[in-house]
Length: 112
Image (cartoon, rainbow, N blue to C red; front, top):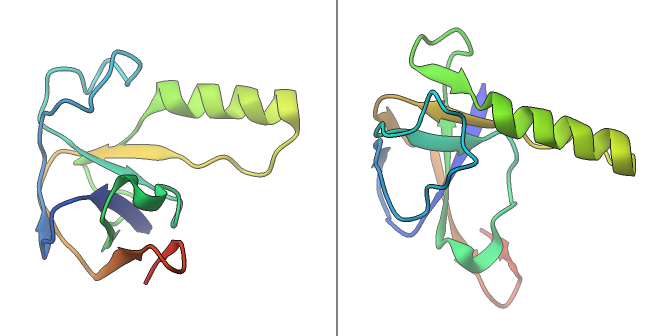
């Protein structure tokens, strides 16, 4: 499956980390672990992050987990506001090669 990582680091491999952007709302199974946060939604972070890194991961990979808390909140918002499919968040407990990297382009307001 295709998943996306948003970062300010230009890298060919993305790795798990613990950092200042982590928060108490994340899935309790990921708390205190160095993990790699991924989304199934492309083009969602705009200029907050310089790079969008696309990775390919087998959905049965034992190091890949769905953030159940984020999934429940997104589904609730979907029911409440009638929006389309909400993005899902995952975490990965290993490093993974980047298959495609896009940089934020301010004039066009998108990753290219």
